[in-house]
Length: 612
Image (cartoon, rainbow, N blue to C red; front, side):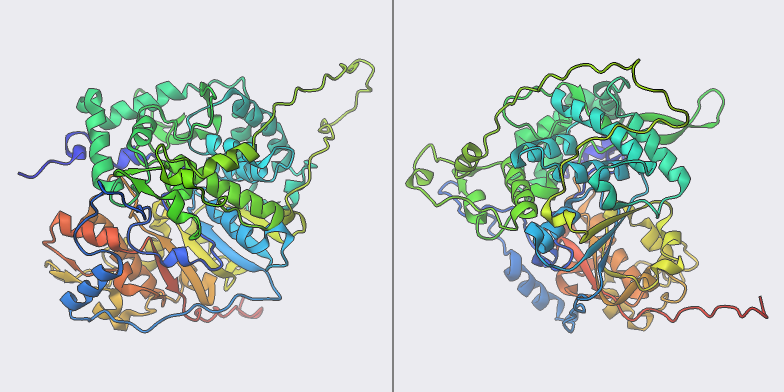
C-alpha cells in the first residue's frame, strides 16, 4: 500500500519554502577551485560504523554509477571538460546569484586570501531579488570581520543570527547597534572600514532607500512577533494536520534528510520545525526576535482588492539551515567528526558547523587551517570523549564588564545646520584577508536576466554560482519557460519515455540560444559555473528533482556550456520511474551541476553616428 505524501493532505509544499530564502540548501564552496563541487553520493555519511550500524546493502558511490553505466549501455560517456585557469594579473570576478547567504564568499576568501596570503584579487558580485537578503549579507560580513570579538564569539553570533528566529538578548542588541551604522553606510556617510569592501554602485537609489528602511526595522523598538508570525505560516502549511505536524516532520526527515545527511539530528530538526531555533550554544536564553528575518511580500487587500506590502516572516519553515556548514568538513578531521557508535553519530550538525566556522574565521586571521587535537584513548572508550572538548576549553570566552562613561553635556555642544554628521567611532580593523583591498563585494538587485545584458558585464565573470531557488531567470533567458520557444518540447503531444542528457538527446542544439542571451555573454570562455540542485530539499519528490537537473542541463546546453560530470549529474530518467528508483539516483548524484562555458557570442555592432 502506497503511503500518501504529507503535502497531499495539506498543501503542495511550495508555501513551506516561503517567498524569501534566508539560507542556502547546499554545502559551502571555494568557488575558485573546490573538489566539493564535483562530490557525489551521500555527503554526511558516517565513516566508522559500529556493530549495531547496518548500512544500506545496495551499491553506492562509485560502485552505484559503475553499475548504472552497464545498465544504460554507456551512451552518456563524455569527454573530460576542464575550466580555464584563473587570471593572475587581474581580479577574479565571481557571480553569486541566489546564494541566499555568504557561505561561498566566506570559504573562498578563507582559502585564497586567509592570513594576508598573496592570492588572487577577488571581486564578488552578489545578486539577490530580495533586499532583506542583501542586508543580511552586509551584517554577516561585518560579524566575521569584527576583530573586537573573539573568534568563538563571532562564530556563535553568526550562527545565532543566521538560522534562528529567536536569538539571545546580546545578539538582538548587537543588531540594533549596527543598524544605524548600516544606514550611514548605505548613504555613503560611514567611516566603517567595511565601507571600503562593500560596493553599492550597482544598486539604484530606490534600492538604497529600501535597504535603509530595512536597517531601520532592525532597531530594538520596532515590534516583530516572530513566534506568532511563524505559527501562522505553520498553520497555513499543515492545515488540518497542524496538531499532528510532528508526524509530517518525521516523514520529511526519514524520506529526504536521513539518507543524505544523517549527521543532522532528528531532535534538532524537530526543534527547528517547531520553534525556528536551529543553533543553540552553551546556556543562552533564546527569547528575543531575530529582526533580520523580517521581510515584506506582496499581497492583496481583502476589502479593497489593491496590492499591498505585508510585513512578516516569509522564510523557510521546512528546510533547515544546517546544510551550509554542517554536512561537510575537511578530509583530515572528517573520520573523527563523523564517527558512528551504536547507530548514532557521536557529534551533531551544530558541532560540525561550529568547527567549520571557527576554521574559516581562523584562516581569515592567520591563514592556518584549524584541526582537531591529537587523538586520545578516551575517544574509544565509553562515554567516548569528544575531540572538540579541547578546542572549546582553549577558546573559552571571558565576560568583560563594560567601562562606565561620563555623560556628555549636550547643551554645551554647538548646534549645526544641515544633516547631522554621525559620531566618529574607533572601529576595529578588518581581518588580514579583507584589509589589504584584495576582496571587493558588489551588491546587485533587480531582474538578473536584464542585469547581465548590460555592456559592463559582458565577458566579465570567471566563476559563477546559481542558486536553485533563483533559477527562473536562467530558464527564461534560455526560452524554456515559453512553450512556443522551447526546443526540447515535442511539437505534438507525446510522452518522452526515456530522457537523456541534452548532449546525447539533442547535440545539434548546443549554443542555439547563445546569441542575445545575458548568461551566454556574461562569462568568459572556459569559466566554471556551478548550479545548485534540489538534492537537499525536504519536500519535493525525487522525480521532480531529477527533472530539475535535466532542465538546468538543457538551459546550459542552449548557451553552449558543457557539463563536467554528465553521468552522475544528469542521470537517465524513465517516464514511469518508481519513486524509490528516483530516490536512489538523486541520493547518489552530484550535489551541484558544474558547467564549463564556451566562447561568448560576438558583441553586437554599435550604430554609427550617421545612422543614429
